[in-house]
Length: 374
Image (cartoon, rainbow, N blue to C red; front, side):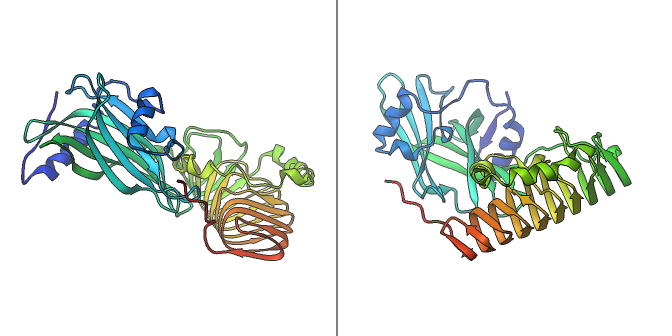
């Protein structure tokens, strides 16, 4: 098994090699996420509020080099419900006695108003220090929500018990994400015009979308996408009827922007147009649809004769009947406007955001202040 020896003067360079060479070589020993009796006991010993420790951001794993010992990683939300900020607690505990023998704490380790923590993984690959002590890693995946096309990042920090303390020997080293090889798939690039569904990866020109379909890999369009599905010609009529039901005038579930992988969305650089847009898309430019645009992210402007329901809109969204967006940075214009996270203005007969509801004109330029958790 490959080892990474961390010697003084070259620890940083060798740490890079350790991460790159060993990131895929973690042993198959199972990590346990969530809270069980042992995890709850550690939470009590650290005097943490269990309600502030999300189950998906707690993990434990047996240490292969320390028989009878388990490492626990707990992220504690010390921010608010709207803007979570996580302190990091890491302990090594004797299984037989339940005694904590090593601990590490970092205040405000992850999270902000734009960066969400998605997952944590304990990595027990064969990392070694220059003193012959085996180290373990903590991988944290975060998502930057500050732009329409969210970017995710996974970092690894290495820890080892040295000189009676749990020492961090590498702090948040970024791990490159290995996405599909676009150069290898270059033969699937099409120029001037093409059709979807197909296995095309990039279209430079016009793409004619003949039928909406879920795909493992959506194409990127540099130019224009035209939705020409005959079935969608009836969508505006159905949507107009749908828009008459008051209970349905709400944005999509609030949690969606924090869990969806936007990297897998179809991307349009230019114009997207048609009777109705119902495919998950990231649009940089202009989005024009008769019925509306649903489950999309727009950097630019979105125009509809009936209704829009975006995940994120950065710019201008205009509809005759309604705009119902989860996150808006800019301007909403329609008879009815709702937004769960607004930074900008709303103009319409009725306007609702996270701060207030008002007729004609509404606005918000700051996050709703949630109650801080005890």
